Amino acid sequence: MPVIDRPIAQSDIAAHLGIGQKTVSRVFGGGPVSAATRTRVLEAAKELGYRPNAGARAMRTGRTGTIVLLQSTRESASSLPGPVLAGIGSALAAADANLLVAQFDDERLLDATHMPKALRELTCDGVLVNYDTGAPERLPAVLRTAGLPAVWLNSLRLQAAVRPDDLAAGAVLARHLITVGHRRLAWADLHVHWTPMNHYSRSHRRDGFLAEARAAGVQIEDCSPAWEQADPVAWFAARLALPDPPTAIACYGELEFLALLRAAQRVGRRVPEDLSLAGVQCGLLIGAPVDQAVFDLQVLGREAAAMLLAMIAGRSRPRTRLIPPVIQPGGSVAPPASAI
Image (cartoon, rainbow, N blue to C red; front, side, top):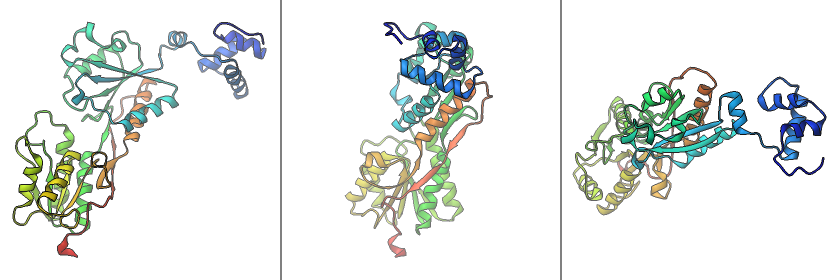
């Protein structure tokens, strides 16, 4: 075949194989062709360096092959762990779809001139909404008006969302500590009682922990401050220095775990010999193995992307899917000294 100094077209593939251009078009348009013909056309396309025209495909199918990840300009409202993004990327790559990240100012949501271009001009097929807290009340209505399927990440919704099962995370932490023999337990969260931007996971993890501990008939203490602490380590140290302190403490997350580690050191209590510590997703900040309840966040990302792709294909809005936690031992939990 002679050298072509322009982008390869479907007609070039057809000429190269000696078949009709309509046959090649059916291959790339998902039309009916034999498996052998499809294989020949795709191999020839790869050999010749053919790149499908996304614009033409969008006009033909009404779909762009692009998914938007919608986030707030407020970083605190739209955190996104790397594994979640990796899971989204792998699912979209398998579906030959692209990911576009769009941010907007919450206060200007209703002003069309400030909405992300992908929503203004319908240049995407669907939206992954990444809002941890404080999602504008009108955002669902805006998405419906745009006619875009949407799946929410880490959001407390009954339908079209994928999130960790935080209630179960608290429960498995309690079971983990009770199983090794602890009977004086505490829950620690530095923010749950005072911050106005509470994520639902704070109450879910605490409630799951307390319900499991109460069912087992063990002693429970809430080791969470009622107001913001300038020195959380000092606050925890004062609690640990009281008579008859808990022998095991479960933490909402990494900040509590790290503060308790330092507080225990300050009052001379060894972990795990004198005090067992466990938490939810605590390993990264600590920088060492710890006992924790963890979620497979890559699965969360993949499930969310797959749910959105199914909705784009015409399926009805599914119920929210929960990602279950598993306990990952790491050496910060041991039987209480009285049980040894």
